[in-house]
Length: 116
Image 1 (cartoon, rainbow, N blue to C red):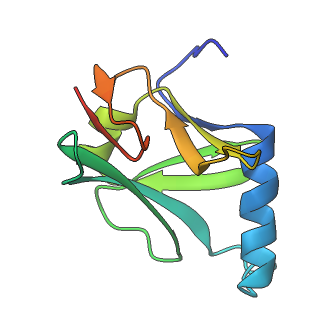
Image 2: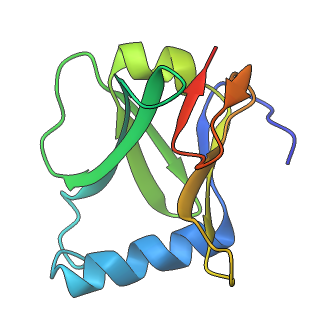
């Protein structure tokens, strides 16, 4: 994937999993819900990713849509996440959701934290 603008992207496999999780949570039919993505301090490399479903947009939030999935993050997190793609792996060594982040200078072995 080659990023053409400053956005956040989602792979086809991650999109399918997000849709499934929204259906299981009973919020798939509610257009007010979206995937909130963020970065918090912590983890073995200094910064960790976080994700959740939300339906409340805050004043400084940045909104993106890719493949029909609305994603929102706060402005500070976006500085770390610009042009990142959310992916999903469910193979034998599958890690679940993970981020293909071109801004990370290093990430830990578990793939859940990173440094810039």
